[in-house]
Length: 234
Image (cartoon, rainbow, N blue to C red; front, side, top):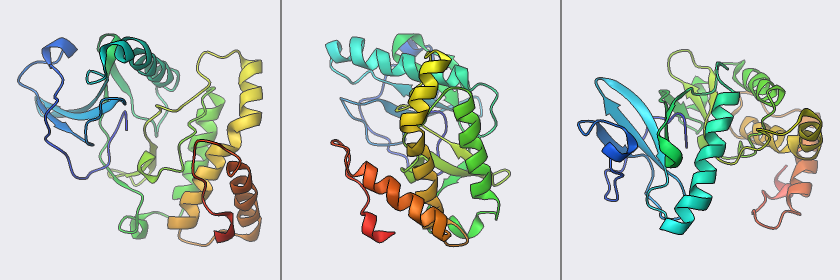
């Protein structure tokens, strides 16, 4: 999850990237925030001079995959962060670190789950809706808000923060093409927010939202590469 990280377990594992090669002083402390993988991006918590940052990198990928697919993933996410710069509720980009890594702001917060649900303010999901709308207005679709780990309750003010734009689309598209993309896929982000409201919201979904979520799940069931939620649940 790039850009920020909910408070939770860290994995002090092997396979650490070479800090000097990433432009980070060797004295920095590094912890893996999820188990490192060879075929996906890896995310590390970096502690340096009393500050915390997130490092996202692809150093463990096989060489050919790293210099093609891995660099494309890093380049695309850096472009997304630059497009969303200054938007409250989205972590800031600190700096690209060459073609295979970037450093981003660390945001303290709690993931959406049963433990954090009692602490959600009444307007949390209304703010989340507005944040998603602002992201769309800047020409970006997140496309992975159904994953609860990608939305956190920010500790300092209990507002929503959206993480991990690794699946995002839209950056660099001309406005007419983005409008078409939004027409085709904008509902995916809406569905993700409705799913989180259903799970953790202070009040149940109203009948209109339940019907909308049911329709979206039926469309999602047609996707080939993702296991959809069961529409009968709604």
